[in-house]
Image (cartoon, rainbow, N blue to C red; front, side):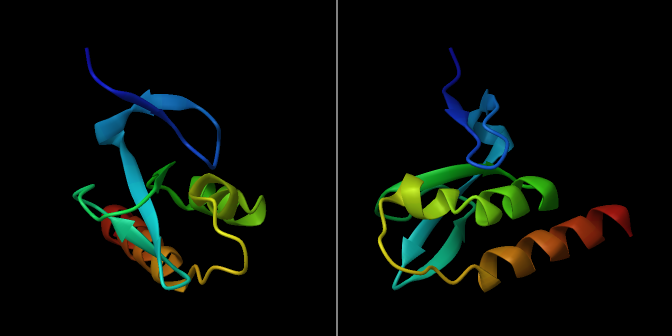
Amino acid sequence: MEPVRTCVGCRARAPRPSLLRVVAHDGVLVPDERAVLPGRGAWVHDTESCVDAAIRRRAFGRALRVSGPLSDQALVTRTNTEHHQRNG
């Protein structure tokens, strides 16, 4: 049986390989594509809509149990780059 995780953006359950793991490192949200970085992780679909929804709802801070602001610039840049590469 394949592990299932819940996307913090849309709250839908999905198989682990179809989601992107995100960790907080020094107040920055870091995409963990190989799912090997230490610490607590939050899972999100690798789409602009799910990442934007998670940021708008402040879901990353709650899921990662981090108090205080988190910089989402690296995650947003990565998601936008992936989206543009897929859609040309």
